[in-house]
Length: 187
Image (cartoon, rainbow, N blue to C red; front, top):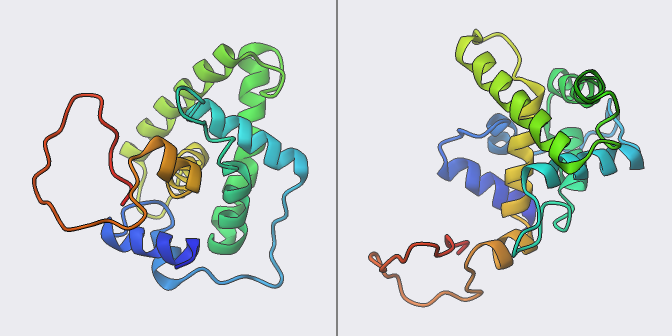
């Protein structure tokens, strides 16, 4: 099973609740005339956003899982043109918000400044989601955050080091004792 098939399965299991589930359910189709392209600096920028959302602690962070690269593939191959545009504009909006709040670009900001900015953007997107109408687009930061989580927890690093992982699981055990602080299962 490749990553695309795994994401499709995850979307089905979650009832299509994650952003872009329509793309997962219908299958990602590589576009030959992709209307969006990402530069190396865009990928670095997205890696830093992802690392701010899921920083390295006792386990590797989102940057180690190459989540920035994952985001670019998903946006380019799976998002509709209107969502691609929102995502690309979101990169600029996030950088502008950093300049307005911190007086410097996101990449030049300290880890604490980045964190505080993303906390504010997360609050903003939650309020937007509460009041948005069905025909309105999704907030760009919600796209970034959901792609970060999906990319990290479906990566080898996320599944094997941040979650508990058994390559070949044994019998099904419906009730396993949980101890506070245990990792969730990836398998």
